[in-house]
Image (cartoon, rainbow, N blue to C red; front, side):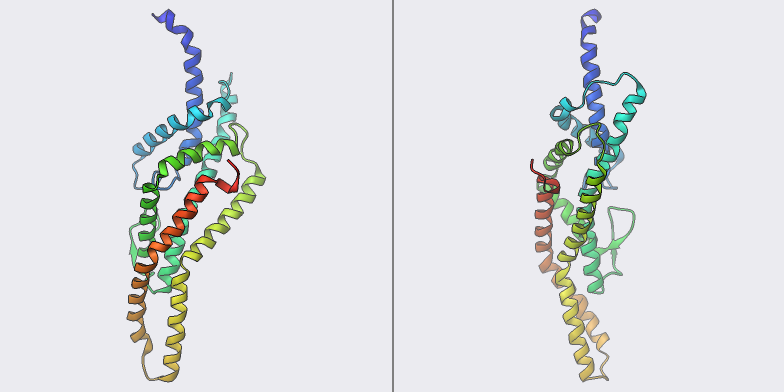
Length: 260
């Protein structure tokens, strides 16, 4: 029986090499992937998820992997750029979580709620509004088929950066600047209702203070600002999350505006 199985050894080595090569990029991407790569998710669970995504992605891209290199240094030279490539593509998805954090921080600062901190999926604490938006956005993305979109995104990454080629510095510079600018622009846009409300509040407060200097308008206006901020959050949060999930889904389906 062993003699009959010996001819299958080269095929098993080829499949293991292709799977391991894909796992290197997928594992690096999983480390920063929203929902699946968040800090509260146990490492063992993330490892299993990385293997599952590898089993999905590998059959679609195995033709471009090539054969197993003859020497270990040659294999390392091929695999080392894959880690950076996986982190590169994964960070752009993590930027969408940063969008919600930026919007929450701006909204909390505008409504004097920045001192109220909530739990966080990361290391640093963040305002309660930002934490609520991050949790709601992550849950919304997961309910919208994040696992399917993530698998398609991983497969599409091999079209943009084939295995073993490494990242093009021009691609890193161009897309990096564009996506960072888009992150701050979208975060500011989501928080725009709170900034407008804060501006109106401060203008009205200034007029009242000018008309009645003896009135302590800050003590009267502070509770109104907090209550108004919470009411505005109740009304604006669904719209904010709708705009965010549309931008996130659009990017996942067509990364960097490239044709599929």
